[in-house]
Length: 550
Image (cartoon, rainbow, N blue to C red; front, side, top):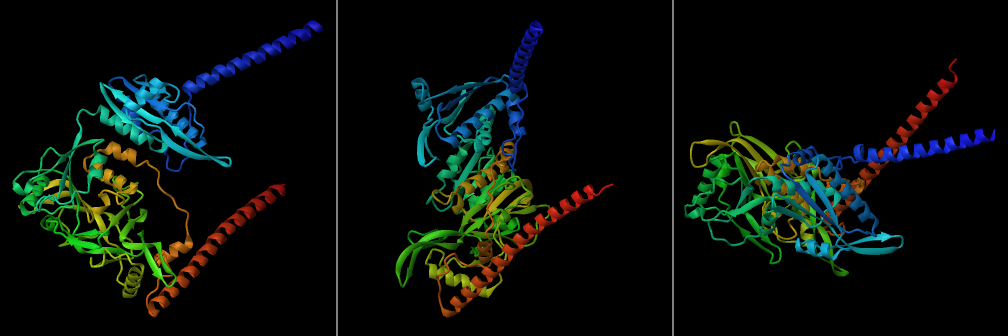
């Protein structure tokens, strides 16, 4: 009996040990060969892109990736980000089937790694996070170096949500035999006055060779080798416009960023300019409005001084000349704008359709203002006085006649020549503003994304467009009162009042907005409560039927 019990215990322990060994081996094999992950994000942001799989599988040589990551990270969010980045790198390495060598180096622990990171321009980034009741800060390395066939690309700092686009853009540039070429044409016709587009150039130099297009007014031609011509705030002479027309008739593609009014807020000055593109646009069935778009519903704010009986203070006020094009105003059918969250335009002109449609030429509105927009004179476009803005807005509301206006259009198909009888299959984008890509605060993150998308679309860089379309899209919580106020064109500063008629109209609109917001809030609450009660009753009756079933 004793021997039988001993044998039973031995067999039990042996079985447990074998089971444990099997679990360990199976776990290791599963980790290597069954690395299943489920992407629960609404946008599928963490699902590997088919573009990335195709790029790494198409590698013809060895790619070495050096990840300069801080080894010990004290910040919780950064630990999660680092883990996710490591997973993304390992997924790409597995897809490459031995053609990617992944090396991790810790500049915080190794002086040699720190010197190497510094040589590549990879610096630690100071980050902060709340840990318990204290604020913890740490300098963190999250940089990458890609080496391929004696060429290299450096990514100084990267986060998981942007990793795929940044990494695969660098990889695409490394493996491409030749770089695309983008030409920049600024002014040309009246002398090089201002050139506030250096940031836009730098943004493109990561993927393109950027050339300056000069001396068209002296008889030079636009280089036909360009993939895209960017015409930024032009003042084209007749010969320059003819040179641009010849380039387009040769199949060239172009992005026009046009202005007829240049505003200097610091000096409160307006400068009227002639873009020289009227003949081109007229041949294509377009016309750039002389007036500016005033969007009472969707506009950005500006910081200014407000003077009241209590004194003067700095406030933020809606500035309807600064149009914010949100997701409702962006074309969703074209890849260039399909996932763009919006953009910001400043003193924009409308791009109107004139003289009827051109046969065979497809004209698509890319960006449009809200339904509560007027075209107004440029006079006063540099005035930021809250009382003036409020009074003008109230006057326009009383006047009526508001509607949406196209602020950017895309032309595709046989483009007629403005200086001859020919047509050429090509693609052109016209935007009624150039400030949105100018240096400084106007070149917002949204604007950078749109600008890159438009250039890539015209250059037919479809892979980059597919990657960039996976960037996160902003989602806002509904604010019923704010939505109702904006739909009535109310300024954010309700205390700004003009005459007694203005005060009465503002008060009436505010009351309407509050009542409508209250009704919408109750409807949403009733719908949620009613849905829950209906589901409960259905479940109750189903349970009762189950109990009474014979």
